[in-house]
Structure formats: structure tokens, C-alpha cells
Length: 201
Image 1 (tube, rainbow, N blue to C red):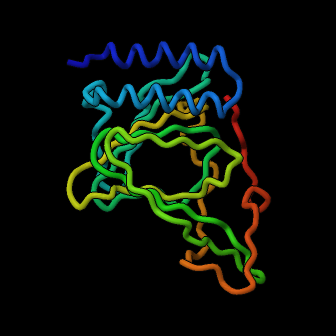
Image 2: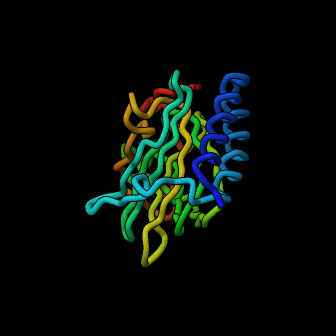
């Protein structure tokens, strides 16, 4: 039976990782392996970090590294709740603890003077599955509860102090969304359009 010790061990290993490594790609990759092991013991997450909110998805700050090198957050969705379309300010690793979550990815295009988001596929993640993301990769996406019933919960490890910056979201995209690239449109690097603050560790 899992207890808080599983989470304590995860934090010890994370502390050692960020102390020893500087490359965010390496940190994210190894964090994914550690998080996958932690998710084998879903009872590690306290009940207070599993509570949803009525109006939108809810973020719980579970842990912040003493020097702000990483944070652990639980995100909780009721059916129908979703993030806005957004990108990230730092590396992040996400693993599903409960339920199913749907990720929709996008690319930014310019058609004349108009900017558009073009859908670039969907992925459904189930308990135990982990994904990694490291800026400055194109990382525009939207995440939602993929189930018709029940709460979904995922654990997010971010390479910054979420207690200080409050969110991992760098920018919210409100451009129109289309399924296919319009004739004559060209893909643009959205970092050049909206800018970004990249936090390495």
C-alpha cells in the first residue's frame, strides 16, 4: 500500500536530478520516468489536492522546490472543463492520475493579415501515461477532461516556481481555429508573434 513515502521519495529524486543536471531536455526526460513510477501509486495524492471547482478546471500547488527549480501541481477537471489554447513558459512533464484527458495540438498560420490556428491532431491520455514538453518547441495546445462522467486528475511537474508565477501558461491564443490550412497561408513561428519568457530550470 502506498503512503506519503512514495511522494517523498519522488521529491528526493527530483531534488537530486535538478541539482545534478542543467539541460532541460535531460531533466524533462528523466522527470517523466520518475513521474511514471510515482503514478503506479495513485493514492500518494492527498484528498485536498483532488478537489474540483464548479466553474473551471482547478489547479492545486502540491510542492515547490526550495529554490524554485521545479513545482508539482495537480490539475482537476470536471466533465466539460478545459484549459484555454495556450503555450508554456518552461519545461513540463504531465501524467494522468485519474480519468482521461484529451490534448488537442495546434500550429499558428498567417493568411494575409489574419492569424489562424490549425488543428494538428489529438491524443487521449489514460492513467499512468506521461508526456513531456520542452520549449522552445512549438507547444500550442488545449487540454480537457475526455470523459463524459467523473473527474480527471493529472500531475504536472513544471521547471519553475509556480507559487511565484502562479501559472505555467506563457500566452493564451484566441485566434480562430480551422481544421485545414487555407490555400496561400504560411506557417509562422508563434514565438516571433507573441514572444515568450523561457525558464530553463
